Image 1 (cartoon, rainbow, N blue to C red):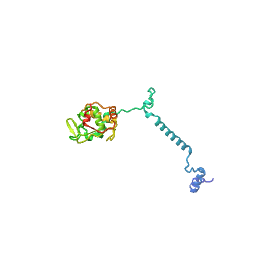
Image 2 (image 1 turned 120 degrees about the vertical axis):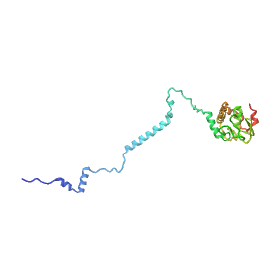
Image 3 (image 1 turned 90 degrees about the vertical axis):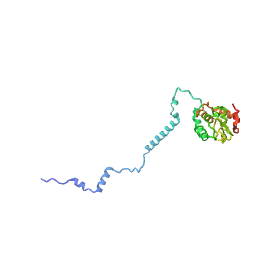
Image 4 (image 1 turned 180 degrees about the vertical axis):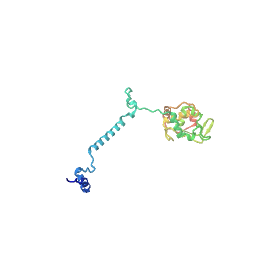
Length: 222
């Protein structure tokens, strides 16, 4: 009876060289194609397609969304006449205060009391709360020479030309002139009526371009 063989095939496999193992793996796997970093065209085409759609959608919404105003989609709203514009009404007191702080405050001060002996007060001034026509002319065209306010004479400085006329120092529109006059007639305890843009425009159209007034000319006005 023959004795069992002690031969183990795993020992032969372990004794195989690295070169033989690599050759065996290559044979099993086969040669793999080298893509060489080449991209597929289909994914790139889809990327460009969807990018174009997103751009088109954003442009469309920006142009036809009506600023996302709910009134745009109101089926019961009346049509707006062609060329009609929605005017934003400005509070004359707010506009007037802004103009006062930009132009008048340096002379007449924030409290409207002016500077003693130099600039006359606006608070409680008969020139401010009195004749509207006189006040409009005074501010639009300015005034030179002395002026008496609340019984005190001021002659150190002239009132500059404010309105939109020739040689104006500030060239304010009729709306802004009306606003600042309305403001000073309501501020510091003054109780004068407001001045409208139409009132200023009418006087400016009537007088045209002229030199600044003097006190006696203005006092002749009603």
